[in-house]
Structure formats: structure tokens, C-alpha cells
Amino acid sequence: MARSIKVGKELWERIERAAKAGGYSSPQEVAEHVLDKYVPRSEETDSKEEILKKLKGLLVANARLVGLLLVPLVILSVPMAPLFFCLDGFYGLLNLRFFAPREDPAALAGGVGSPAWIAPG
Image (tube, rainbow, N blue to C red; front, side):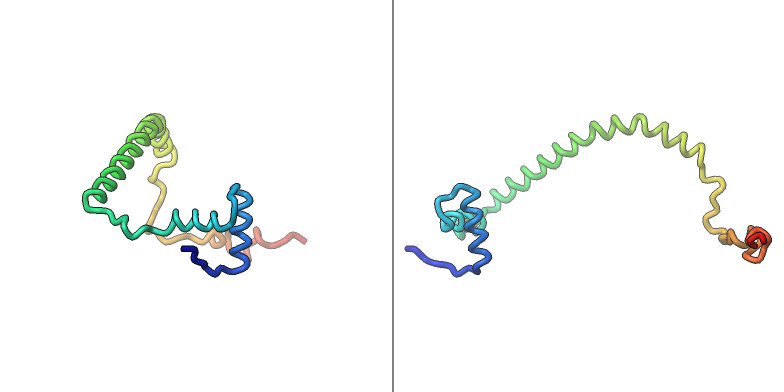
């Protein structure tokens, strides 16, 4: 029951290199291994119960991850909260005017023709 698949020369060279690097006995063994691993079997259809079981496992894994990340979040938020209050008190939003027209810095300095912009000499 040996069948053949035509592949390009470059792909075959990559398969041969993978066979040598992976310790396979032949390039055909590498190709069989890859195809067996990545081509789905038609008889492996999951039932609804199996799908729900996999989704439940995924939900449990995500909940465990959130639980692991919650501890560092609480630990880091304790020193960060006073720091944010101090930074807010120091910089504050009092002097920021969000909807006021912007002022041109060159016009404030007297413009391009002002004595500050003229080179001496």
C-alpha cells in the first residue's frame, strides 16, 4: 500500500535535513510522521460532550491563570496607589485647559522679526 506524493526539490531537501537532524532513518519516515501528526483523521469527530468537556477545561485553565495574576496585581497596586495620588497632587489637572485655543510660542516670544530672533552683527 505504498503511495507516493510529488514534492518540490527544495521541500525534499528540507525534509532530508530534518531527517538527519532528527535522527530519523529516512526522509519518508519524517514525511509520514508530519502527515500523521497534522492531517486530521476523519473518524476523530468530537461529540458534544467531548467539546463541552474541552471547553470546561479551557475555562478552568483561564480561571487558574486569572487567579495566578491576581496576587501580583494586588501586591503591586498597594504601593502604586499612593504614588499615583502623589503624582496627581504634584502635577494635577488644574493648569491644563483642554478646550482653550493654543498659543503660538513664536508669537509669545515676539515673532520671528523680534530682536530675540535677529543674529548679532
